[in-house]
Length: 127
Image 1 (cartoon, one colour):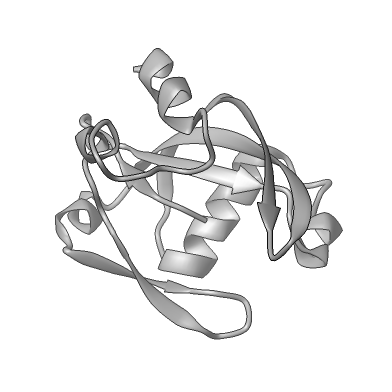
Image 2 (cartoon, rainbow, N blue to C red):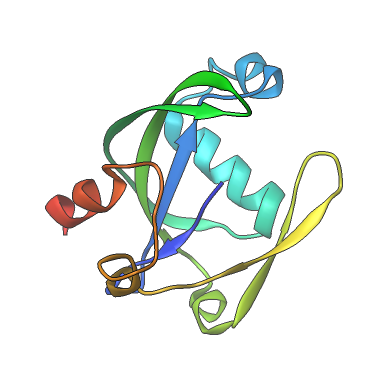
C-alpha cells in the first residue's frame, strides 16, 4: 500500500494485484479491501472511499518483466489527526514495519518520482 497526501487532505491509495495473499482475498469488493488494508497496516478507518480508476504498469524488476494492475482509490480517513503526523508506521502481514511519510503531490510534479507511471495523471484528472 502506498499513501499519497492530496492537496485536499485526502489519501490516494493504489491497491495492486500482487501476492498469493492478495489473490486469496480477490473476491473481496474493492472498498472492503481498502478498508481492511488501512486497518491492518496503519490502524486507520476510512470515512469515504471513491474509486478513481485503473493504472496498468509493465516494467522490469530483477531482470524479469512484470505486469501489474493498480486499482486507484481516493480515501478520506475518519481520524484526521493522522494527516498531521510526520510519519505513519506501516505494519506488513509478516510483522515487518516501516515508516510512511505524507508528501504533497506538488513534489511529484517536480523532481520526485511517483510510481506507477500514470498515477499522477489519474489523480490530477480526478481532483
